[in-house]
Length: 393
Ligand SMILES: *Cc1c(COP(=O)(O)O)cnc(C)c1O
Image (cartoon, rainbow, N blue to C red; front, top):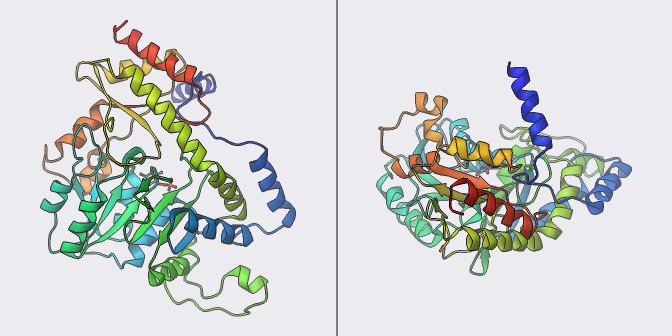
């Protein structure tokens, strides 16, 4: 039965008329990978170094450390700040589970904070302040869908209570904040290059910071706490090594870095395409009263990673998503609130109703396809199907 469901699902997936996301890969990516293979050095070499320095320049941070995933970046960011058992870290509940799990990996306690409103899913600054205790060490901010959180207020709050700010910038590659970039606004910024992100390498991540000590610590922990990396030994700069910290294997491959360099070149123009497509969605769905479009009047910049809508309470979301699937349109949910998952509920129970906005978003949100290879016609088709579906036309 399960097997059958799975294979049905796979066949359907192959037939999506408009998938939720798609890679923007072409000849450049293929030749970048081929040239790595020809050079016969597969991990942590010249390409990784080049990707780090170009990425640091892109986000206007002093240091960038390439890692195996966004989750690894979050883990090492917290580790480098000595987050440990007994500490509390403030986290949104409307996020990918990894933002919360990174806190758990350190033995610390995640304290869930509600979203601002149904129009702004980002962490609520008012709720943040209420949840600060003597054990609070810092805040993890997620710029939902790429939309910049209220960093002025958050940074001010952090300074007032002497807390660190880690930006989970998995959605917000390229989001601006005045002359600065998202990811370089707090102590450490964490990026993900997972397949469905704006910059995709399959798996991969980056931690960025202006703090030399933190950068060094993250760099060290990325590869077993080892003093001299393999690359240095290969270049015969060093022959022996010591282990000076408890580290991990969170290294990036040369193939990943080569893909990242190509993807970085396309990022600004692809984010622009995402913005234009989002505007077409807004223009065509704004009149539909059963649908609320969050962030429609958001004052800050966005990398437009997601296009989220909130369905009217009366609309059955399951039915809505099924119907769109029949029309070849893939949709998803961002997110089911983390505090409601079985594991997190069991280990970190919240008072019922204490995160009302997150729960409402979790019940009513639907993400529509958004990626740079979509056409205007694709968006118009989706909007038309939605309007038909809810009886607007
Ligand atoms: C994708 C994502 C992550 C995790 O990144 P990985 O590279 O998949 O480990 C963390 N936080 C958010 C908000 C994400 O969307």
